[in-house]
Image (tube, rainbow, N blue to C red; front, side):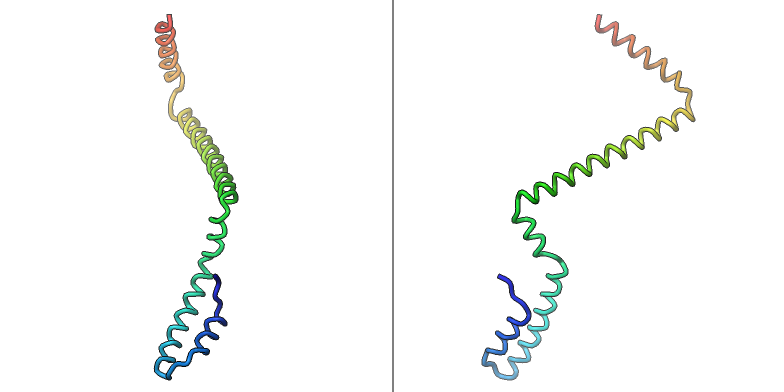
Amino acid sequence: MSLNYEEIKKAINEMDISRPNRNDLNLIQKYLERLMLIIERSRIREYMMLADSKRRLFIINFVAGLGKGFGQAIGFTFLAALLFYLLTQWMDLPIIGRYIAKLLDIVDVYRK
């Protein structure tokens, strides 16, 4: 059910109302106009149309999830590359390599 400003104005004018009550109705009419403007600006109708279509909502959320996942993967790769670059500049990686080699030897001994 969709009401517009003209329908509200027509309904108010069709009522047989005394003058003091008409002033109250004019005030209510102004508030209704503001409310209708706020609702139009907030795009509630578009959201409701989107929520009604489960398939469209699923597709939009699926694509958004893919985009977020791809962005996280790219971001993590960039940060990991930056971290390894900084480690190579600040530390001597052969020391870390020796620890990794010892760890691999311990794993090989455990396997046998």
